[in-house]
Length: 142
Image 1 (spheres, one colour):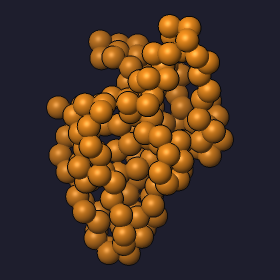
Image 2 (cartoon, helix red, strand yellow; image 1 turned 90 degrees about the vertical axis):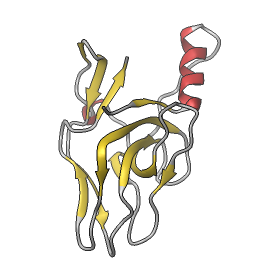
Image 3 (cartoon, rainbow, N blue to C red; image 1 turned 120 degrees about the vertical axis):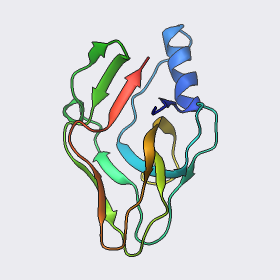
Image 4 (cartoon, rainbow, N blue to C red; image 1 turned 60 degrees about the vertical axis):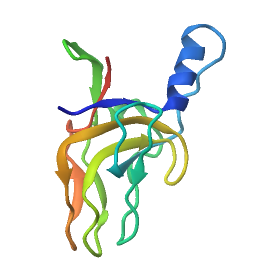
């Protein structure tokens, strides 16, 4: 079963906002990352892929509302999905198996906003392009 959550800094920002202690400013952009090590808790260790042409994929540099579906509520919680395909650069050599993903506010470094695991590790071979089809990247608030 796939696991997902928020980054620890996002948890803190939302908690401060909800309890009236601080304003919340949405990130200027959102970028997808792939992890070779994915934690199962918000404060865990996440190891992002690197090398062989890997770079984060742009979800939306302006973080516009149109980049995401309308919120949906079901038994799993409240969630949104990506409105358009998200594509990573073409791999110049095989990448390490990806066990999960992250959504960051920057093309490198930055704040981990949300994360999730894959049901099984995914490998991207040389010359292949990893992507999330429209609607495939699900961000859940449980």
